[in-house]
Image (cartoon, rainbow, N blue to C red; front, side):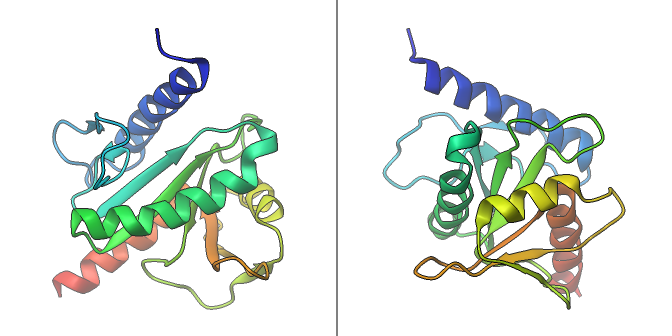
Length: 173
């Protein structure tokens, strides 16, 4: 039988697919699902959902939030290269999201369509908590500039999807 962390991760990935199918069915592949075969040498992401993006899902507890943010963002870059897609994004489930807050946070080394006026943070956990509480119509993006770590962009996941949609339109034009 699989260990508890694996079961939690698998459940998080299934929840992520369901969320994305509800959020942006127009961007999702037919038959969207989890990628099977964890630990592949040339990993292309946890989800088989977007044609142009690798998605790395993390569903850690509160103590692992910072690691989840950085690991998902940096892993997604490598997975995007393996999958030969232009975008990679970390999808982090907020462990204590209450109704009316953002349950899924995007963490990304690059952002599809970077807006002006980024909100700067020194800690990824502070950025995630800020993003979790943003109103649904606020499309602000945070940037974490912690010394010794890669710069990551942070926002509610629906904000990343909006930027991804715009970037796809720009590339098609």
